[in-house]
Image 1 (cartoon, rainbow, N blue to C red):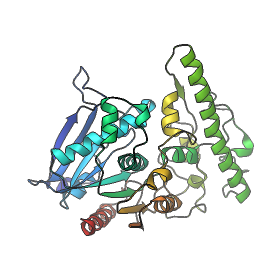
Image 2 (image 1 turned 90 degrees about the vertical axis):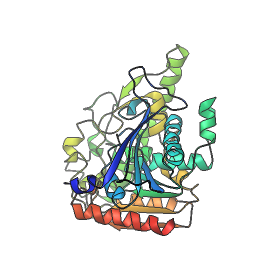
Image 3 (image 1 turned 30 degrees about the vertical axis):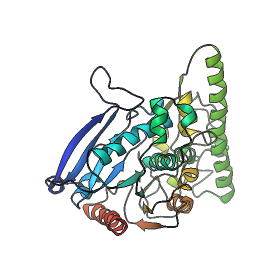
Image 4 (image 1 turned 90 degrees about the horizontal axis):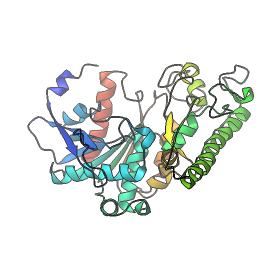
Length: 376
């Protein structure tokens, strides 16, 4: 998609900053990095910020679209860009706070809009919830604790094709027929979503049994991770890596009658789910502490509902109906979970990153900017 006309209308500034809990590395890299995109020759008073758990958002596709419409956009990365296996929520939140402070103190922004896009939706939600009511203080001390207790709040929140939460999306995508987490082949055929005897279409009974088995798989990994961490710590070993296989198994990726939308099926972000399920997915490698911090349904604070319930700011939830990995019910659950009464839900045309066409992206950008304009 050719965005050259938009790029000609904007300025871009690279930002590299240290974090209260992570210094600049000896090779020169900063733990917090991003690109600030603004209308050419202007210092906007309203700006967006977007961050992901591990995906580099510095060159986010939406940046020139919003900047060309008069807004700033900070595509922000924490220390965990490209390092999903090491993620810890408390430090990610601190790093996001660094970007928020930069917008306020260095860029002169008066109104900050948090954009929770894709997997970053629950991360940005966790940030705002922590800024409202801190809960992670027992995990850090010193400068880290001070940073957590003084996180700048955003003024507006937009959820854009966002997963409900990190544990929720991984569990929804898990292949429930996995028998042994350390054997990529072992399968319970009675739960195999790619066995034609089971569907699609899938019966209500199979769907119920499959969803329960997905949650059970998440809990089995959690139980093992807690026990293994205790065993290692007792021997003086702080942590260990472990692999995760077969996580392109959401029944909605194969059966379009479940959670109906305009999406193509069978399809996921990596093509046909039966093929993608044999290749790496989200969560493909983790430290034990990372699993417990990010992916576990039991222990992770990266779940959407409990964080969104704390929200007291205006919120907009936008969902593209051709998205093959986030579905209408996800958007409705996010909208229902938001605590404030000043909230809206818009289901619109478009795939996950609105890569369908230039018009689809323009329409989405207009929707976001029009909503922000009414709230400033």
